[in-house]
Image 1 (cartoon, helix red, strand yellow):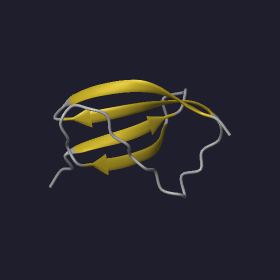
Image 2 (cartoon, one colour):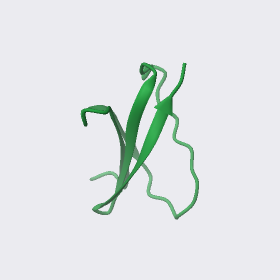
Image 3 (cartoon, one colour):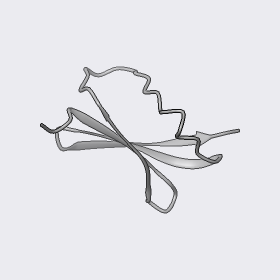
Length: 64
């Protein structure tokens, strides 16, 4: 069975650095916790949420 939705974290070159399946939700604000093993270096990334064939992308800045 396919996941309801997925979140991919991409670096500035477009390479996927994190992939996470999530439950489909209604519109609104949500928090998705990444595993502790996902310690990425500081920098600019792009979070891409894909659900039912539609995708949304937002910039993410990690500051350490």
